[in-house]
Image (cartoon, helix red, strand yellow):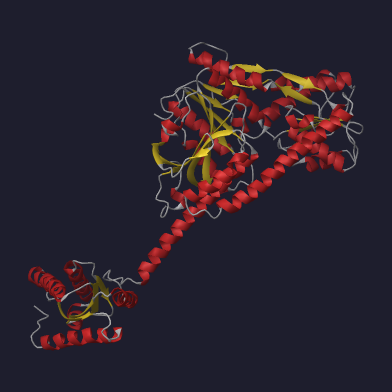
Length: 636
């Protein structure tokens, strides 16, 4: 039954390696498992080097889930870097789901929502800076302009400052992107607007921007907090180990997950509850605002954590490089799975891993046809309890996601990640972890390597099919479908070598169409072409033992076959002549299709060259042609 009949919830999230996503998924899936629900975490990576085609592939992934099969749905749409993918997921939920839907950190349609108390969340930080540090000159780094979280946090800052009789002017606000790549732009903007002077404090709308601002200030020789205070928001793990550690605002992510779970259980049980639940914020003072002194222990901890992370990342980097090299040459899934087995242990916490692909004609399908997912899917890679299962190719309905025998009996979380190369959808991967395990950066890279390897395999199959097609065209007569002169030359040499080395016989039957010029002159070349095709049909119909027919010139044909005797030749020629006789009798064409033929049976070690055998066959054919010249009747 796969997953279709099991108790389960779906979680939609992007970027599961970031701190917030790691924590919200971990706490939420644990709570679901305790209550007997499997958690299927649909995860998009997103955010790095996205192109229009890549984003199209991300949007296609919204069509994978069977939304109507779930007992509950949790939306983390504010984590999506691709707004089109987030919108498509929301549209599919609205259209197809029939269960409680909980949105986390962002309002979504009319669904119940767990929110950060953004309208008050920054209040504790601003009051701390004014009441404790007596600051009056603040600069605010907001998030993406128009983003709901950014709008509410900025409004909170302005409101609290107004209570103190202070005004946050437009020139004291800059908009970042909630990420760590705009630190220099932010600091340059502050210095330019303030003629090289710094404010007393730079208040950032999240920790990533605060980290980026600190790094940019330190590059310019400024010391924090001596020259300027910097604060963040979210209290991610990294801010504890930066130098200096960064003061932040902590949101209890575990409480957020538990609140979402409580909402789901209440709605499941038919209870009426408030539409919104707000999770409060707590200010966490650290070194960047001067509230805790730098100490040898804090520096040691920071350095230890830095080198631990650096060592892990360095190891993952080299693993990624060699994984890419290996998987890039895989020609099929057996080779791909072998290479994956060499590296997958880098995902230390994983237990089971699967690659499931669409039921496509991979050799012929075009990129623009590879949208969404097929009704049946193929499981092509399976690691069960970290053991690679050999030669797996199991067909399952898409809604089941996995075969029943691959699903653990105890409810747990599975991460489902779309496989696509640019806009072409391949399928998805599924991975589960031990309790507390999370997706690592290496898993992201492994997933990308699988996508690249599958595109390489698909291109190889398409190229092989194209080469086969070109090879066939190279030796095929376009008009009749028989092989052409080049095919005849290749085949005669191949068969001649066989009879020499294996002591067998070969027949060469030369056939020449009679009266083609008469038909062309009287009725036109289309009728002449029809007559040629009729003669080719006669050759095909006469064949009974792997004979090969050729059109080697305008009205010239040849037939080759191995292991022919005189009786075999007589049988072939009788069937050939009989076909033409029947055609001429029943056809309404104003002409007859007739032919002359001659043959020879080549024997090994006869002291006769291949050219001499061909000449012998032709001579006999021309003898018949000459004898027929006086009696043949082409026109009816």
